[in-house]
Amino acid sequence: MDFAAWTRTLFDRGLRVVPPSHPVPVRLWALPPVGGLLHFRCHGTTVDLERYAEDDVLFADPAGHCDCGCGQHLPAPQAPPRVVLRAGAVAVDGARYDGAAEHGWRGYEAGLLSVDAAAGLFERLLAELAPGAGTSAGSPAAWTSAPVRAGGHRPLTVGHPV
Image 1 (cartoon, helix red, strand yellow):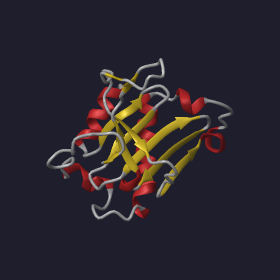
Image 2 (cartoon, rainbow, N blue to C red; image 1 turned 60 degrees about the vertical axis):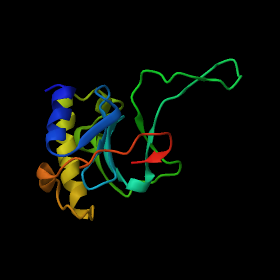
Image 3 (cartoon, rainbow, N blue to C red; image 1 turned 180 degrees about the horizontal axis):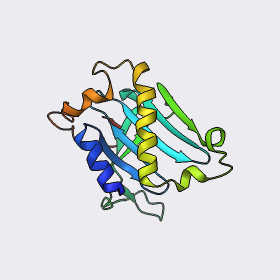
């Protein structure tokens, strides 16, 4: 499975994968239908899945600025809006896979995980995270039939909450 196929599968289950997600090393930012943000990352010897409250999630619309210091705004770059966390945001809850303890990883093995391996760990950590998530939609299995942000998002602007 490649990264695009995995993100399509997650979308079909109700998780909207958003920038700056990328496949190497695997880092995923996803908006679940129950609100908030899931941040999954493979780094060092650990794989983490953290959930952030909706109030801590912002979309940043890239804006260009002249480098000469005059303050002139340039046309926006051809980059999509990105998810960012509010300064000082702390995860509501999280789950961690410790590769050093379970497989003897010593340095950067988590960053070398394939998309298939990362997808399996994502499911494992999501299952650990869900019981204590306290969401109204229940377990991730219930997300499969949930609409993704029915009615669409509001216009994206810098510092605009999701």
